[in-house]
Image (cartoon, helix red, strand yellow):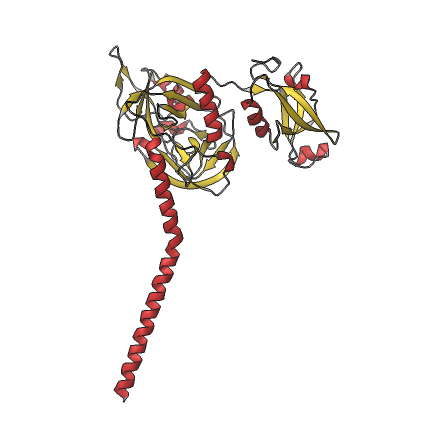
Length: 395
């Protein structure tokens, strides 16, 4: 009887242990559901976008060492000696590093063209239009594009915009290319997952993951437009490549990093695709970016300014100067007016107004909603070109 009871107890313990093990396996499996789903999302997004990402090699003329260092610093290039490159950088200034590693290219006249830029790009159309950063192709005598299958084409119709650091060009492919699917960068929120794809150190189709860390960032090298900040790893050679969402849609163009040593330190910047696409279209169609303006200088309604004007914080942007004879002056805008809407779009920051105005057709007439002495008023302003805000006439 004792032996029978012992066998029963041992059997029950075995069953209990089996149940515990099974439950443990279930818990482990359940715990892996979320990470596995995210991993599949990363995999699918990368697979969707990678065929549309290219490597860009820019070649220029030989130059002496001082000129090379000056041009490298201006264009965000890392000089050949990494130790030397970091010596002249400030700790807080964002850098746009490129790694000049490929061999020189022989030009048609037999001269040697050294590598001046290495970056990435995104295919916009099947017939060969590509977007990248201006600093990747700046000053280049010849630009070579490498597709994911290592096919090479020479670029033509190369146009860049220094103020936004966007450039575009064409290649003539022997068969249709795979264009990227563009997302809506206006819908992004802080914390959204993103992937960066490019050719860091010429390691083609490298993918790194991160999140949108912040929005509406400004850096010294890009004077027009606000940037997205991400902690997805961006390194030399990523410039001009895409930042994508979990659907594989391009939502930004990688452009810069904040670094103390010339490499990735967790803070990268990318140009929102809605902004970059508009600039690329302007460059492709007109060879330059036609920006509109109204001729005002603005002040953010932070707590100090808002309190002084007896207005709610962030209720709009305050006009503190109107250029004489400008579109704004002719439209009736005055100092201390607060612009709350422009062309029907809400305005919370100066950058909001800048982005709304500059993309509208020069010569068009737009509605402006303002607060003046506490009262809401509606005005109409005819847009002028940015290089002469007093030239109020249709194109």
